[in-house]
Amino acid sequence: MRRRLLAAALLVAAAVACAQPADADLAQATIVSVHPVDWTPHVLDGTVWTMAAVGDTMVVGGAFTKVADSSRKTTYARKNIFAFDLNTGAIRPFAPDVDGAVYALAAGAGDTVYAGGAFKTVDGSSQRGLARLSLTGQRVSSFSAKINWGDVRALQAEGNFLYAGGTFSAINGVNRAALARMNAATGAVDGGFDARLTAPGLSRTRVEHFDISPDGSKLVAIGALLKSGGYDRAQIAMFDISGPTAALTGWYTDAYKPECMKGFDTYLRQVKFSPDGSYFVVAATGRASAPDRLCDSAARFETAGSGRHNPTWVQRTGGDSLYAVAVTGAAVYLGGHQRYFDNPYGTDAKGPGPGAVSRPGIGAVSPTTGRALSWNPTRARGVGVRAFVVTPHGLFVGSDTDELGHEYHGRIGMFPL
Image (cartoon, rainbow, N blue to C red; front, top):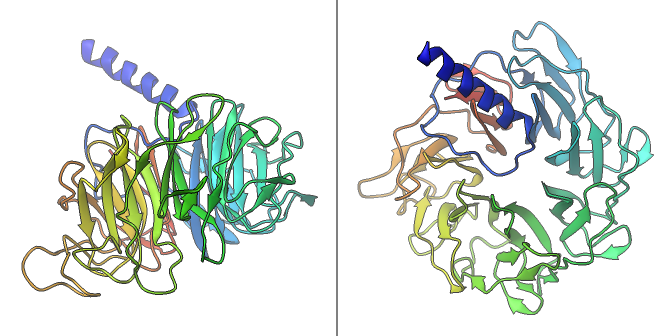
């Protein structure tokens, strides 16, 4: 009886956790299975760029035109965005008309989701780069934010605010270079936050990704940025967003000053805080792996303190890009098109000397040491994993290939706890 009551309590707790909008990665006590579940749907073309859990629904964004149920017997036309049941994989009727790629999604209040990307219209209405959608599929017209040009690559809702990062230089006519905070209900740009990002000498200022600490007090942004408010911040900057007026913190690192292969205005691709907010991990590309640089690597940095920070550890692939990271406490999951982990001396191959281990396309490392864990489900590498979503039930993966854990999974899969 006691075991049944405990099991029931755990199921209720998991349901409550799923019902709340949550952007930070959830803590998990164990590493997920290497065997994906069989019930996730399939995206049949293109790339899955982003996913967001909204209650019992998973919303998926990217650049695609067709999806299928788990059996592949029924195909649906879904352009750039669709949704499925988080517990069964059943495809939802949700099918807004979005005329361009969706690169970012964030759960909103009241069964809504925010979408960001390279689109210009939603359901025939002008809504460039930003939109709020009801899970019934309709555009929420009271949210009227629009970027001036470019795209939106990262979104996160926090309290009454919505944060956006990308390549834009203004929202609703208000100058905001690559990073902005808006009223979550109306989309009006908030005057209390102006990161004043610049990238002298680069073609444009761009925020590739950002994450907000679980307590909502810190924001770390990465991308083609070199200064914030005149202060040097090479590819990464931290802001205090705990009050009504946000401010650049004294935290910085010089670790990303060295150049990787020419042509990269930034080689940082994704950043995620740990569930307790004490550290974050950055995933990077760069095509110039070396023991003294952070190209093609993942690196952990501690959140606390001011002044210069060096990485606590660095995981190097030996020349293959990492694009996505998830931090659960039990593991740091990394995805890209890598072939190896623990490969600091590799140059687009397995390096000389001992250590390198095969981890094609997906793998996990220790949060404390950064060394490869034994978890090795494998995936068809393609360009790489673009999205991880941690839920109370496991780890969802979005990418551009259709083999995961030695099974067919069309661009979406889920490893259960």
